[in-house]
Amino acid sequence: MAEIRVENLRKEFGTFTAVQNSNFVVGDGEFFVMLGPSGCGKTTTLRMIAGLELPTSGKILLGGEDVTMRRARERDIAFVFQLFALYPHMNVRKNIGFPLLTQGVSKAEIRRQVEETARLLRIDHLLDRAVSGLAGGDRQRVALGRAIVRRPKCFLMDEPLGTLDTEFRDLMVHELRELHNRIHATTVYVTHDQLEAMAMADKIAVMNHGVIEQFGTPQEIYDRPATMFVADFIGSPPMNFLPFHAGLARGSREITVLGARVAVPEVREDMAPADMALGFRPEHIRFDDASPLRGSVYGTEYLGTTQIVAVETAQGIVKARIPAEQSFQVGESVGLALNTARLSLFERGSGRAVSTALHGGGARV
Image (cartoon, rainbow, N blue to C red; front, side):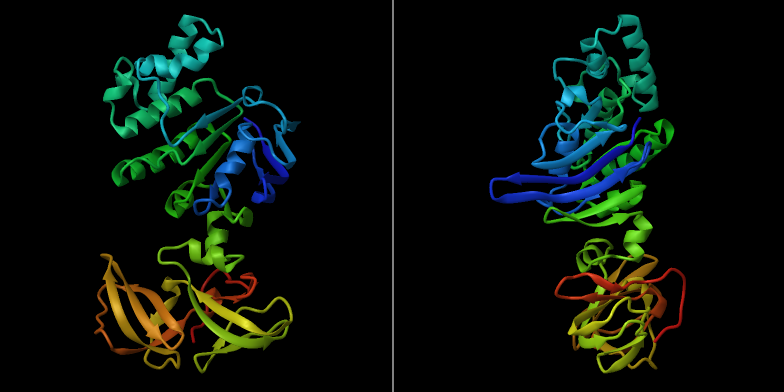
């Protein structure tokens, strides 16, 4: 396996820029996820790493070698697509072994490697079955087996679970991560599903309009979002935002929102009067009648051990994740107490964070 290094990667299609000067490193043996909505540039980036698209500018290094202008077959990578692209006239054994056959590997060695790969993926009992009769999850395992069998430098996966139903997808998320832990393969995985990304990734790059808005571990991205887009895209429900207008001095530790003073993490820079937003996750709210931040219950969503309570305020709807045993009536007035160590401040014009949440607990307002 090998490190993947992307430097100032850019891709233009006529006047449209699909990827804007991306920079990131995928460590040797790392599971790296490119996450974002449709059309954000993540698949285009993956195709450039694979050699299926040539960049307008920038550089791609695989294992320290510059492969920017090399053809796909010269890069020693394996690609798994959303559509399984299996050979319908071949059985499972022949589908998995086909890459080795094209490389001139002996029949005995092909048989050994195919059976070893099939055991790894728990499909050794299906080797002589026709692929056309397999369930979606098993067909995806066959596609993975065909990629794994020749042990390439890295694996590139483009929405490989997108066509599976929820039950199979949840199972395959677990199995893909488990497989990665066993073979320690350098993997670049593209998805629009934040749950897949958070469950599998060592590192995540969140993309929007061709730009990597944040790069980091799942916990870093969830706890300390760099932009309002990241804060809104990651989390279910996403981060709440309460707008306010203020000027802030570097080191400011208090703001006024909905007429109440709220303690916040330290501001990193001087901010002239601007449209700002206070951001906080639903789980960082509790209801407290003594709190000056107030709203009225708009609705509830029961989730078993917890519930999501939507609260209407003068600045919009706020969602709180609270214990399921607490009971509220629609229209009931409630006070909102915030965990002040887990708040973020954003400049709404640019969307960038000017003060981000800290780890650990803290006082509430």
